[in-house]
Length: 521
Image 1 (cartoon, rainbow, N blue to C red):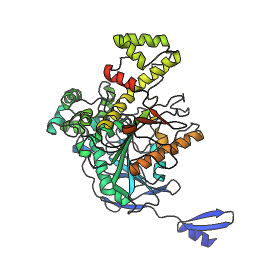
Image 2 (cartoon, helix red, strand yellow):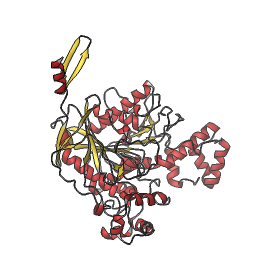
Image 3 (spheres, rainbow, N blue to C red):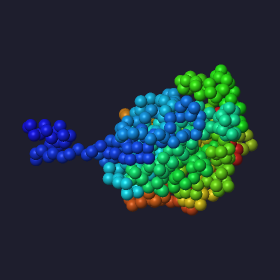
Image 4 (spheres, helix red, strand yellow):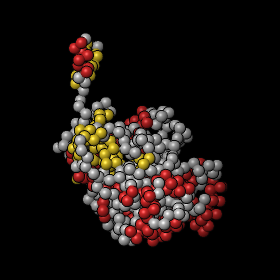
């Protein structure tokens, strides 16, 4: 017994089996040497993954660095503790399904996390996936449970999740900032993403990753960001593939105005704060800025055509064939925004809606969004709200990339309604963001949801598609239903149980909305 206690004090684990006792040494704490210094992470997922959390990819954007392009991170001495998340970027509570594992909001938030297969070595050259979280450019963080302990890593990729500046801290573009920037301002949050990608290019080989095989992927605002990064000259060459889930700068959901328009608007807001210049504005407490931004319901701080990071509206870059010519996956969920306009809808009400909102085009509207029965009218109403919310912009992105991208395009629609739980009680719609836990293989972070075996199978298939794509630029692989290329075959895949493929059955609806726009309702 004295010898056993001695083994335990030396950090040796004891495993008791039916046949007796076996002693084995616990693995040493994983470490890595980055350009900034050495970091010590931790083992997760039963020792199958290494996690290095809270690594700085840029200097803290505080004081004089508030509303400036991210600066290089400082070196550190000794071994950095990389076992805990850093704080998320400044934000207020917006959505109930946003749960965080970090210490809280702060301006000092430009950190990332690296998840690595246990077997990875410096010479492994594994594909790398860099995740850009959603949240309307107002909220979200890399510490959300649905992005951690991911099954993506178990498929032999390195996963990087990042924080980036949000809201007023990430996208203020007033006249004073424009003068300071030589006519350019805003897009600090997008610049953060590029800084993170540069950090990955410089450091990921130390973790066993291939800096030449990086896939960026994001959902909602993160997907909007992916569409913009593909058009941004500063991001060129920092990634080899891209995945966009539910969003693109090809619509009006998240506005992107010119620097001239935004500078006037933002300057009027800054003037209302009672500060005289940028020096005073930069000294204003973050809490006061956040409170003022939250109260200004008419203000929305989002990316801008600043003339430098984004030299023109994103669709124009694609139309000219100047976007990144790389393989892409683009898609959205079947019911991004459903159950609103359709509530209580009947065929007669829908026909009246068509006449009231579209007049002479009512016939064309009803041909695209039919109402031959009450049930069909309800479905048309859900399709209409979904497409106006997110799907139209994503559809236009697919069409633009397929037209000028000179690289494979794969399109999907996520059709599987998640089971009922606290934040999605209905369980009949495939809502906005419903695919996330399937993509990361983290279904069990949704407390109260009763998952079926079919859900776990679908998640396993999507994880395989995503990691196959990150590895080769083609999502297809052994044991998976065939996913045809949209740019050549004009077919998309439907993620449901079972997985199916089809032609674009909703193109008439999208074409109508492109031509006549959405009605106000």
